[in-house]
Image (cartoon, rainbow, N blue to C red; front, top):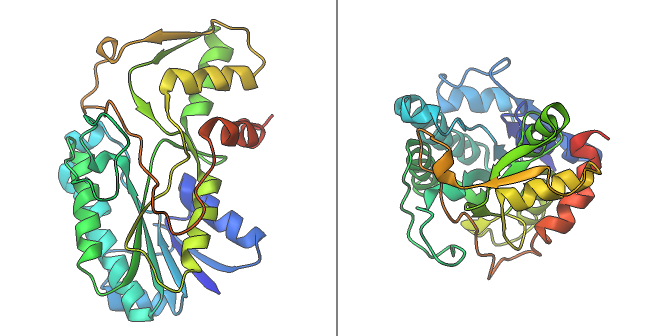
Length: 280
């Protein structure tokens, strides 16, 4: 099976390329250095040549910056998503498109189901929902995978930021009133691989770890992995941080009806991932 990974230099894209290679798949990666996405989808399809599975891990993820750059966010998260869907259709491959919890408003009282109506509150979330809708309207053999609170070995992520703050300052101030599901990028890759093996492809799945935690809860587990004493994480409210984009109060996603085994508990998966992610 040949995979093509668009955005293979980002955190999740690098995880896809590394993990797939480790598992013996043939993988070709594309990024801004070796592919011009302003080309027509037919021209790009000729460059890709062939692929059984195409992954779109390209994303504009600067949530606050997107408020001032909505057109750029839409270009990357929606226009490019549609173009890559057309490429997948042209090549006859399956298309795995990565989306986000930010398509929801964050005001729910329980984890969001696949059937819940999206209501994004940010330019970033609106661009990702636009991408979902364009992919869904394409002729590609697609699955949209919504994930959230990603961390991984490659690039910047929350655990590395918290570890640096604790090491440099002796403490980290972290919000306790935003709830979500810390999710290891490698687990998303493994989940996506299982989705790709299905004979009947689901149009939409939720790909996050199970359970739920606040950012402060997660930070305390990170501190524990660093062998730091209790109290190095100082819990604060969102009101104490001013951001351009509204952060969802609840980002947890419901996994009921998943066609493949779900990702395990966020806490257990973090302790499995910690050594690799923190490089310790």
